[in-house]
Image (cartoon, rainbow, N blue to C red; front, side, top):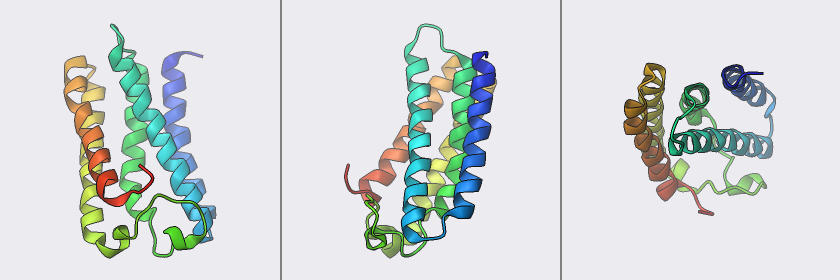
Length: 154
């Protein structure tokens, strides 16, 4: 299977996984596990992009598929943290209580990631590696900014 097909399939599976996982995550502990799995998929997508950008000739199909995964997941983060899914859920989580205490600030941080991933997705679609390289650091900065305030177990 070509890298293009693999990247496209990865993006579609990621979006379908989120929809399916969200539908069945009935208990707070299940919601925590689903949230963690979603973030792991985002981490894998970010790593794939980073790995490609280190190569002399980046594979645009991999970057585009991973950019799609990030853009699909980022807007959903707002829904991954319902009340009762912090440490009190009984599952191991790095989510800090400040998420629910300063929910508007958390929402703003999530919106920064949404904007960064959309901008990155547009850069990836352009095929211009210079634009892609210029847009990617904003994604990492948005992730880091949220983790610094809202995530423990760093």
